[in-house]
Length: 66
Image (cartoon, rainbow, N blue to C red; front, side):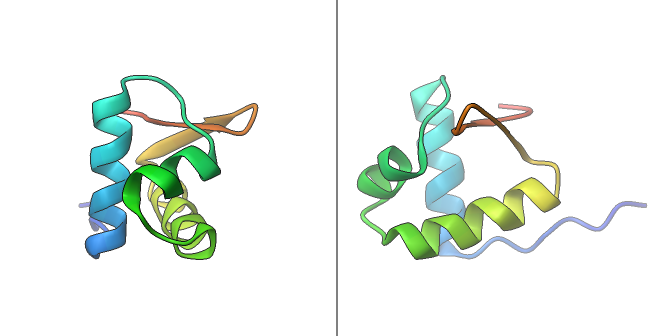
């Protein structure tokens, strides 16, 4: 059984932003949409990436299973 990461409010905002966008977004775009700092969003993206919830290609982040 795979453990699911516990998402905080920043993680949820990032996931929601990526779901709504329907396309890859940069760190700056995600931070602007979430109203959070780049640093907080980067930590969240790293956590989501490590838990295989998002993918990154050419500095564009996207959900793996929207």
